[in-house]
Image 1 (cartoon, rainbow, N blue to C red):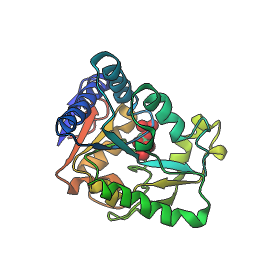
Image 2: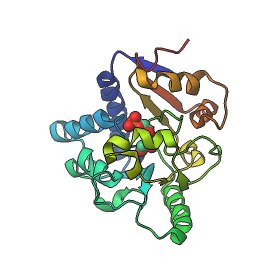
Image 3: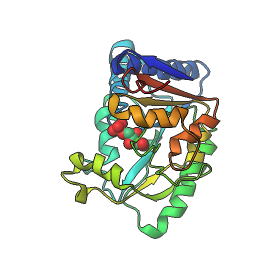
Image 4: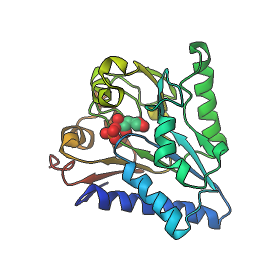
Length: 247
Ligand code: F6R
């Protein structure tokens, strides 16, 4: 299904409420909530709202385990552009999550260790019973996570090569495209698909053409997000501008 909100703020508050409802319901059952998280501009207000709920409404993250979708490769966690820094600044350093419950792909590994590391990332998720909820943004190439065009629907966590358009879109953060890493470690489309619930968010007219393709276009590895059409557990959460090209 597709849900369209008047603006990204209202939409983000709604998504944050769903996340907090999941966390609280797991708390009542004495269980952990296992969340798949995204970085980038799209989820920033969702995280801000979760931080507000923690501060003002006593929402605790003691029973939350997180797995981030991706990280650039190579990337030092302390670098300003790392997804570790992004998550710390936007969420983790403002809430009471246990550090050992946070998982973000490691951008510092030697090449030959990445394959085994990625298999272990998958095993950890599975050992916890899988992701309860996966949050996604979408890139203008149609990527989810960093699953660029050509990604297989059953792909797992792995090292990938970033598209030129993706690197161009990231160039502002890095002060020029030439500084954007060429690779990333990302959960696969298959990994994402195993989540019990998936919410893909998109805001602004800049995303309208790719949202049209993702929601209404023919399923194809040219636009990896079209694979989400296969799942009944996916919701597209859009603002009016991102939805403006839908029929
Ligand atoms: C980020 C990620 C990417 C972004 C996408 C949109 O962890 O996996 O797929 O969600 O590139 O980025 P923004 O939100 O910056 O437009």
